[in-house]
Length: 408
Image 1 (tube, rainbow, N blue to C red):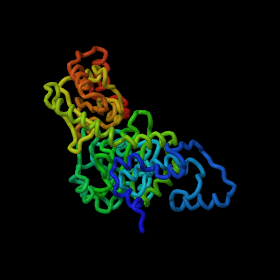
Image 2: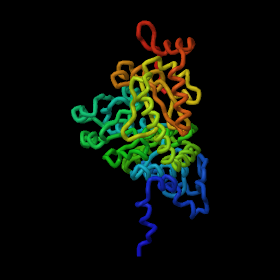
Image 3: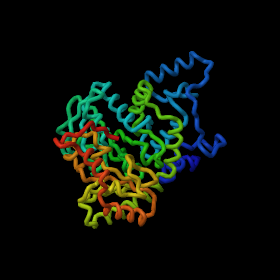
Image 4: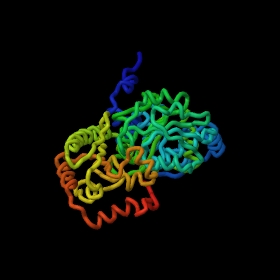
């Protein structure tokens, strides 16, 4: 007779998986909390056996059976995080990296190694993702299009179609099923950092690759950096080989913190989303706000365009933290044209809807009334001479050229 418990995991809710995925063997090990393995190397008295295992990895990219060999090949702690995220996204595997950009780089290198260097992408994307594609730093070539033009943009050497939904920073959304249909046989990569698997599971809509900057909601506390790609095992094997060759590994301490972050991910995302939706409604009726962007699937991100100087709002907040990044338990606000998307050409970012008056806010877990009071006071803040001067310098010089853009 089949053990009923063996079938239970497939019927469990996402919140349950968030708590238990990657930890299934702890009771058998006599542990409650996942162990943290900080070793960079591991002893072995069977050199011939190690050689055979390393040869197998070089050939297949499959995760090594048996004890670890070297931290650049694999680490037991980060492997737990990978297992858990794959469970949450509904994919066979996941491969973790030192950052979201390292994860995207690995994906591009896998496709380029197969002679498929052309990428079709939809703006807006995170500023550094945009720059990596547009600058051709990895020998890739990009064609920018809107979702309706994906099919026509495909070429024989197209290795990837990339979208971000909700997009950074406008929160624009795309129909993933329609996009996947337009891709044909070309893999679809979806940056789902803003949505997290709590709000969206792109693999269920046909995406082969799901990218997360784990630095954001997956970690959730602003104290860990990482990236991860959820995908099928065939692609994961290639990603592991690239990770080994390039060294873009996730540190085990980061893997430990990210696994811990997943346990509270559903609670954090849902609570912050409730507050964000409330703030979006209030901002939409505020006469000082020209336009509010909030995704139909919800989430903790709100973007809004102001009639006044956005730099005065940044300078006026006291409870909210004016800082780059997002997804933390505290609320952050930033001016994309000055920071996260500064590296994108000014005409390109404006065409993608990233106006100079747009502010992006990552809503945290504070009380909504306290946040609204801080926003209201910041929107009414008097211009500060020093801040206005700094803002003008950031916005460009007299001839309209922008100095040395660097995106974060």
